[in-house]
Image (tube, rainbow, N blue to C red; front, side):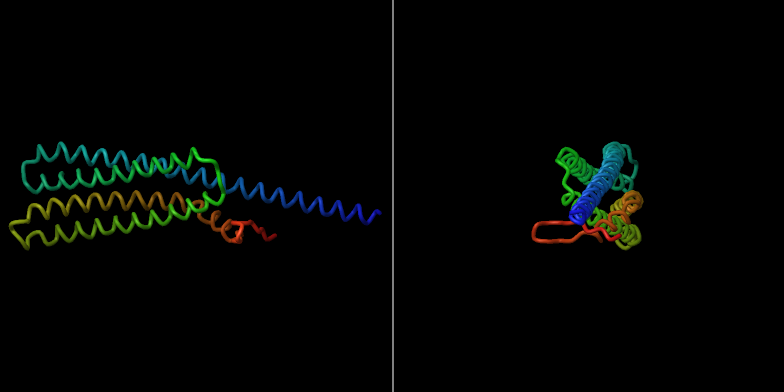
Length: 202
């Protein structure tokens, strides 16, 4: 009888430990997911402010510029500002939807993976922007008819590319503060037909 009681107590202790582990796991993902969304909100606000400044520069600068080169420079700033504004608004709406939705660990992990993929795409576009700008500005003298346009567009793309590359790298570094923690969680996940399960190795 005593052995049965000891065995029952042992089973209850194991269940309690397992329950604590699951709570800790869920709370960890919830905290990392919260920090991820805070970073995304702040970065979207910065991107929106830069987009608004670029658009304003395009609208005002184009009308006050004295040369065609600077007219094209401001014009391209305005165009990039509109595109960037769209990206910022989409990011805000996406994050707001995540903030108001019911927390789900599986969805949180997928959001984390998606964010990293999106940032890598952004960095690729930033690099393309800079390379295109450098090419246009560097080859502007090759064609006298398009010299001013290539110089203006090229300089604007360089400025935009440099700023956006810096911004996206700062965002990536901010997310990387939690990358190792997410990595440890992902290492301890097991995929099954029923979804994700957590296996902690002591």
